[in-house]
Length: 246
Image (cartoon, rainbow, N blue to C red; front, side):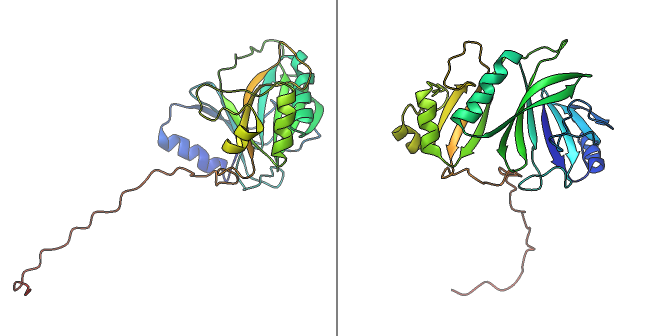
């Protein structure tokens, strides 16, 4: 589940109607899916629930002071459902390998309490890994990935290498298995969400871990690849007059 911010739910609803999109969407007066008192960004404010063609669920909220974002708009959190046995290893990956700020929490979900690991991945942004509830179905990992920028790039890579976490995706050219290769591409990849202890059933999400010197660091995320608009064609009136002299 993704959570996004917009200026106006009313304008967003009108946009979805005008566009006539195939997306399934509805206006919710209460987002009772997630709640934790420790994190005010997970509230019960009205939102628009949108389900994409691949089954991804987006909750679109209005921007406000309780939904902080480094650029005013964006995704305050990404919710991922996992088996309860993977939570300690997920926590270890972010705490021990990436040295991110990690906390344990108990969330109200589907009228019950579930355990969760909340990872701070940027100003006003977090990953929420929560255990699957009864009746929910875990969706198999299909190869999606996330990009993360770290300040201590070298030591982060060395910790990942020591834990045996470096991953080379055959679909990408940036295969980094040591520091020299990672410095060349200014990034490296991992797949297993675990710390230094091997765990066979660990959750898998490809992480593209980038240096802050990467060319995409801090690039604008709104209309970052706008559709090119050709220049207007101007028709000039025919001018009748004497021939020009060379």
